[in-house]
Amino acid sequence: MPPKTWTETLLPLLGTMRAELGQQDIETVAALTGAELQANDSISLKFWDDIWLIHFPDAAIVGISGQQISPTSR
Image (tube, rainbow, N blue to C red; front, side, top):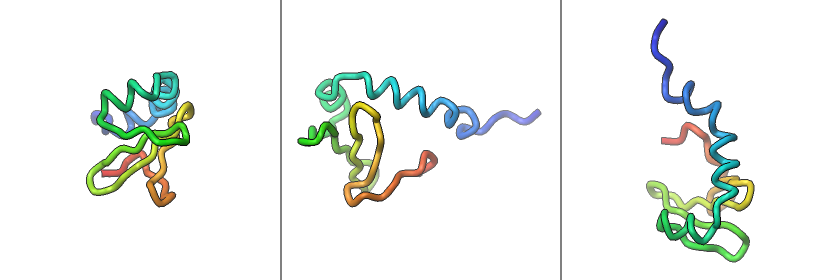
């Protein structure tokens, strides 16, 4: 049996990781990641050349212009 790819290993855990992130203090997450706090219970974080918003407490991720992020992006 061939070894699992990283997507086969990590994608099933994505919901759990988002739930755990959403339980963290937003100010602590911002401080630890270099993200900027936003007024709407979200943080903005630069990822490559894009800026993404992570909304709390659901840890939903959208681009600054509203585009969706794929779990397998870059």
